[in-house]
Length: 68
Image 1 (cartoon, helix red, strand yellow):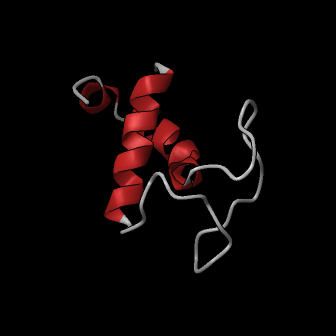
Image 2: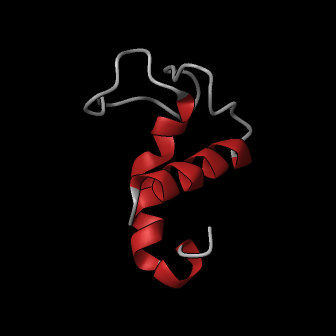
């Protein structure tokens, strides 16, 4: 799955959690940044909190993810 599609899905998940995807990710509430993604300087944007789950979603639901 291409990286831009995963990013779009992660940003949508972030907005669904009522978090601004462009704000810096913090360690508040149930969402924490446990590791830094390669190529990103800190602080990372909040949508990165959802990147791994977005990649899993895209892999499990390729037919749906292709349309996003």
